Image 1 (tube, rainbow, N blue to C red):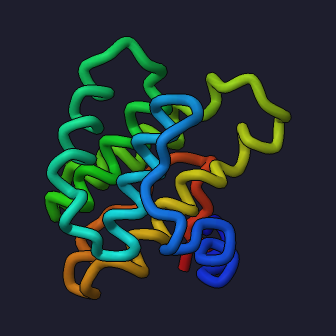
Image 2 (image 1 turned 45 degrees about the vertical axis):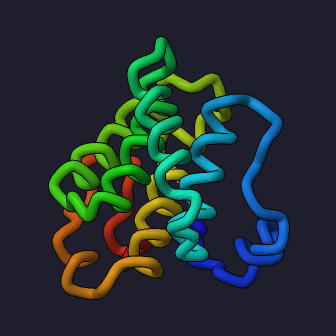
Length: 142
């Protein structure tokens, strides 16, 4: 979603697959949040949000927590919190042990921003502030 490729997202994570149940716990929670948001699966929302809030109270990396918190904020339609967490995704991504490219371009933040663009009504999406971080390229996001 960093390049706003909706077709790639839906092919790699089709609705028929349903909720995730195995893998790294934080990523399972984030994937299930995405599933609920993207496919409007409100019947799963209560349990998925409960598990997400549990993750936010655990000892996890700031980057992982920011991603989960951003998705929860989208579900809650709290655009102020979503903006804060999107900025945190950028800041905390530099701490991840990855190639230098990720220090200059936060792919995850761009992807999360595009997810918001596609699932929110325009008036809510416009309330999300782009991160004030050098790893978030405003022109690319636009």
